[in-house]
Image 1 (spheres, rainbow, N blue to C red):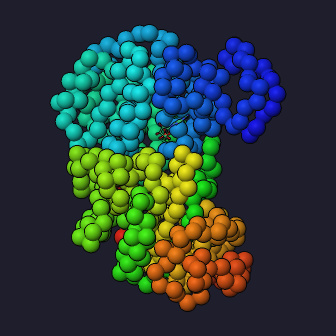
Image 2 (cartoon, rainbow, N blue to C red; image 1 turned 90 degrees about the horizontal axis):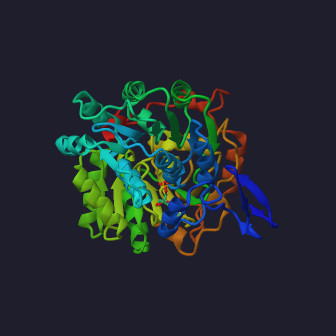
Image 3 (cartoon, rainbow, N blue to C red; image 1 turned 30 degrees about the vertical axis):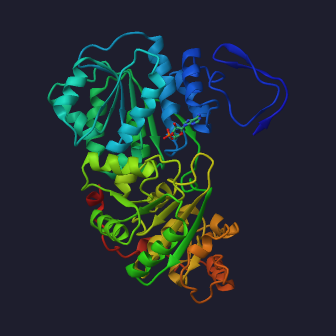
Length: 483
Ligand code: AMP
């Protein structure tokens, strides 16, 4: 968006003079944030608001309940955090002992810590106190932290309820409730906890709900907890990963997945690779194998202690570890800007999870590559993913089985990976064996037959959406195990 010309516009009662010509994004001052906050942001290198911030900040400042459809990486923490902090500063009350003024719920320990780290940066020059409570850490220490009164509490739902039950904290003074990664909280079975918590926070609160996707249950939840919410959206569901080049390898089994993975990792020694495994056990086994054969690898999943996870994440973020093998739950929402490759070693059972996974790369304006492995058992999972995204992922090696075409409901639109030329060297790395039909220079194949398949559907021929006929994939029903 390029707007031209000197222009005056109203922002919260103030008339602000726009610069002569400016590109793309609004400044935080324009959005109605105070000088103190703008100065803090400037020191952090935040000069312009991201699209979600541009849309959400004015609405939150005005006091609206809000539904934000946005992924981690879009700047959503600041989108809800900054206006909330601004309003809390304007109302200079201090919290009573064991009370809080604002509550932010997130599904995992890592996300809680990430959100709190961001908020602590924002409140540095203010008297506001940010406290975190998460499972797997000392409850006594958390009780002590809460005893002094807390401005902003960032918590996972289960541990928060434990602390409420112990009377370490009450939520009756809270005026803000933020549900972050709401879809993931539902996936993890936090629905009952959320219901309990929302009843403990007074009704005269402002509620903000952020979610990367909007499944029906989230919409219902929003209807229950939010009052006349405004809706802002920056990445329509299924389109989150537009900037990511996507490829798929059709492989006969796990051995080939590991082989291709190792070859691609070897070809990208400077890359930071996030590898998704369906199970904790699988993640650990793969990490150990990669480590044994000389890759700098670590893993994060539910069998790791918080300390281990944090160390692994730090080592990955710092580039000491180049390969992080993770389950969905452990990696959800993690913001590591330098991730160059996301591997779907196992395809996720839920198509939305694919969008979340590949959204871990191509952050902050960088490019990213997502490589999926599709074994014969995964073909229908791939088809569901492609339908959700409305694309067909470019084939890097192997043959696309007929059953893997997008079928009815798919938009038969060529995916980004198929449209863009492969980056120098990249596709070659992605295909160790020149499978039948592949191009020698390694570009994803786009055979005539595939294009035809895409257009004639391929849902199986009986006119019924193939989704309904999907066999239960291996490992389904183990989703909680991944946490
Ligand atoms: P989030 O989506 O909140 O996890 O933010 C993703 C990353 O972008 C975080 O590392 C933020 O510190 C950073 N960030 C958020 N907003 C801005 C901004 N307006 N300018 C620069 N960086 C930002």
